[in-house]
Image 1 (cartoon, rainbow, N blue to C red):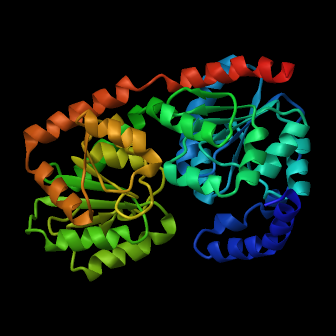
Image 2: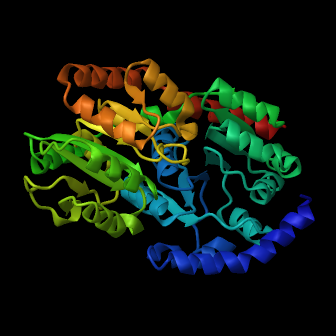
Length: 423
């Protein structure tokens, strides 16, 4: 696609995008907040040295919080602007970073909106986390002399094939980047094959997640409420369609009243639907929001809260990783490993392929070919104390052995800035 066609496509898509915001706001009001920001209109921002970090949603926002803490001592006196695309990402930013950063929606990739964004905030440099490539925005940053780095970058075979189908747009975006810090050698090779230059490998900063005492304490409180005499399987960050498969498998499994399944949907607008789905399968259901002790007859708890995923994992005996049982590419198994829990992943892990393979090789996780086998594997682990404890210890060792990426990334960014400015 040529640049004029890309611009025309965005002009045609912009009204549809606004309608889509309104549609999604029926369940998440945040989509209609600060709509002007998506078109480059922002509240006054003080003149100050500023670092811009883009974190599209929840996982990237958690990574942004880790990176900001590593950048602060290297860039004293700088303000941090964090941009998002989803209300859940923005809410996570409020939870993790509070008033310590500025926050805004990333503008749509329209020429006037991206120019306004760069001119308004005047960042010294930008960091886009993972793989969020908006060619017009990156071009406008480059024209304004603002280096932008793609950091903690990952690129699956599937995504690489998708970018390769649009070589013009891909080259346009990659050419405007000041550098790419990839999670793994495989990611770096895929970026290089697409034509990227200056690709380094710094590791996955999600391993540098700090497990705070507050999350552990909340996990202990959860566990007391769930019942110390019960075995608990947490199904973390499930996606649409997965709960039905997992609940059907649980319903077909031999009855085990000592086992409790805690299902935590990834998106809050689906909390009610998942609770009803579990009841329709004949399970006695309670919800986290009830804040009550779990009755002996309850088999399924719906984790209908935000920002408590680490606490849910800390309360678990075994974790089933959501997003891996249908074609979603998996959610972040590193968090479960960081609190020492054995993990069962399904067949779809392309978003965390390296981490999944490494966790399995380390004995911290196992892979099941489908949801039914995953539930069977979780039940087997819940009944095998020795194996479950060994996997939990392996999970802790796996998470700890991969730390240090955030310091490498922050150092690489700091070292790259003089080079990009000289160029």
